[in-house]
Amino acid sequence: MLNPKEGMYVIYELLMFIGMAIVYSIETVVLTLIPRRYRAKSIKGEVALITGGASGIGRLIAIKFAKLGAHVVIWDINKNGLAEVAEEIRNVGGKCSTYYCDIGDKQAVYHAAKAVQIDVGNVSLLVNNAGYVYGKTFMELPDSEIEKTFKVNVLSHYWITKSFLKDMMKNNHGHIVTIASVAGLLGIYNCTDYSATKFAAIGCHESLFTELKVHGYEGIHMTLICPYLINTGMFNGVKPRLMPMLTPEYVAEEVVASTLANETLVVLPHVLRYVLPFKSLLPMKVNWALMYHILKGPQIMMTFKGRDSTELDKNDNTTTNYEDIRTH
Image 1 (tube, rainbow, N blue to C red):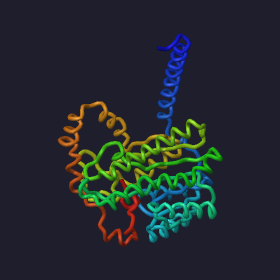
Image 2: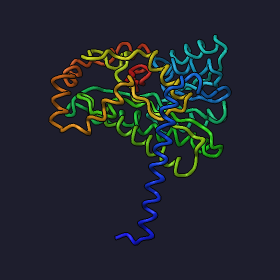
Image 3: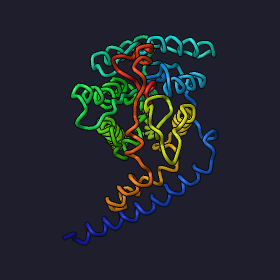
Image 4: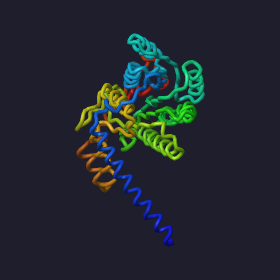
């Protein structure tokens, strides 16, 4: 039982929390009313690294960052795509450095990171965008594919972020963007491996956010992006029932805008941010009835085909398929 002194301290902390909650809520409302373009920071001169930036949303993000004055660094295993996006960026007067890197290989990541630091400098804006999906039911998943999915979608975040976070902490300046997925907030049929990695990526992101806050690194910002299905070929064959797939341009624009505004969480489309909490509020049977009979979530994923293997071969992506090719 609390003694009177401890009880007073608890009451004091509670009142402080209520006061901060009111202030932060008002701040959020005010910022929401101010268009993003009026609260966007400058990234001119920043070194921005995008994984899986040779095509898809990664490519679009890279081009947009370059136009804003950042020196863009792109990692990918799509050699043709790397050359094409680098030329496109340089044609518009931007700075771009590209590196062939399989982020599912820890040593390759550390080697590429060291090369970037020597060639370009310290990375101050990191976008963990690349990813992989196999798309089979639990018992059909080969162990090798499960391991690959976790290496690319989760473990790479540790290796890559660790490579550049030290300098961000030293300067108390930086920004880390995690491209996760709605599949990391809601388990998806035919994607036990993919969903698990996205849940893990979100957990890693939120835990790191907490660590940086606790240790006073207010100059390092973190943005978590959780998009719905994106029409880039990653989920070929899937035909959503109530809302269409998102366009790559829309998602890329949202990623850039939310990064410039230092937003912490973005769920796309935005309406889902207010719908998904019902998962925790409704009884499990109600959730299942909604998912199966109304949204038809499992049914639409039964037609999932993924990207044609011949297209992957053409793009030099026969080893690891990045989310820039197979995006959420």
